[in-house]
Length: 306
Length: 268
Image 1 (tube, rainbow over the protein chains, first blue to last red):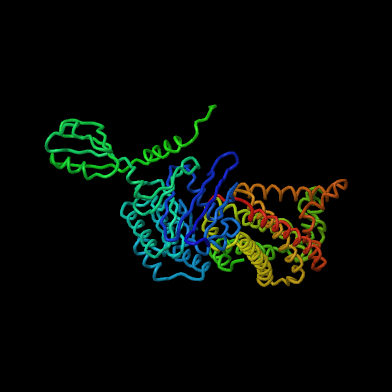
Image 2 (image 1 turned 135 degrees about the horizontal axis):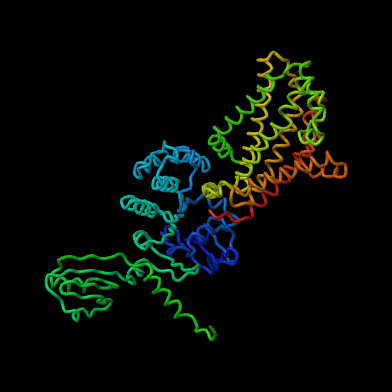
């Protein structure tokens, strides 16, 4: 294996007939890294995971996992991979216990106490058949099946889908634990917040193309947050000429701002006028994408013909 | 193949398999219990003689006089049509579900994400099909034996061994092309419809070959030309060559299925 690299793709391309799945993707994921694949629906995230797991064959380019070819050596790779699909498709007649037994036998056994601990944390009744479980509980059972394997590489496709906020927090915690035990996590998500919470680096995909690979810290500095502030004393919007701050609306003591980058200077200025209330909306994924998309377009040579 | 996957599939399908086996067993038992005896069976034999030839060919009744024996009665009343319908439907249903249903419901993702090769997954499904068919054939023989005990009729089981073996090979071959179609399809309904359609065409080809001398060559394209229970129970022989030919056809279908499964994309 190339030292430190768990996943590597070179010019990876997949077309479904005439429809582009992904095209020309170069990626490298290091051992122990939590790596996000971020993009809206149809961006090519699931196609990337399918290619890496050997479910589908690349049209061009190559993908390797643990330095093994993702298509030709798929069986050997999957002895070291745990996969969570985007929808919890499980055998309806089987119970959680039976599914754990099955997956355990495929891999030479599972740690029973670890399974029980996960069932407790995720609040899953392993004795009930899958068909008697709600969609959210099926998702939790799928998560349990993935995390119980303690695999060196976890491939998670939209892990928080269908979960309540408390359980979403638990899933983030589980991913952080994987990082602490030096497992590599590949996380596909359309949630900027989810990716931001756990990932070290993020690849942004749009319409099957890789826009950028960015460290989460840098990504955060480029995010635009919308902020609403209610002050005790009115503030002249002219005072808010700060880098990365735009006043969207000013009405008496109420301000609506678009903010990018560090907040220290802005917060001190606002505090001087007494902050009575402050709400900050989650960064808009589309806005982040547009930023990278514009950057990518700017870097392209201008075509002479349309 | 994976013993774990075979065991799991048998476990999850246990109710369906048990019900099917019970149905096959009870039907066989009932047919033996309904045997009117050698003398009384002569009347239905005459009725059969009176049927139009096309109907007799379609029902596979070649020697109506054999209805006077218990094995001839069972072959005509059960093994020739009803047994084919029951076990043929099972082979088509189970075979067409092997890959396509797993793909349709997404559970194939669970298997593909495990350290099992695609060939192992397919072979495990085929092994379950073979075991289930063996169980159903055995349940048929048990039903006939129980019927004989209850009706106090001596059922010569040794005369049914040839049909049982040939039947197993015949239904396994039907199951094998259903598995091939299942490997090609994205939905179980497509595989099921195609397998049922092909089976109907095989049946039609055999009918035409038997009824219409000019179409006699069609028997070479139909699996049904191998299946002739009345003849076998009369002679009591085991048709090893036919069994081998059917097994060879099944192997060819399964090799093609394995090739398809190894090479195709699975969108799970």
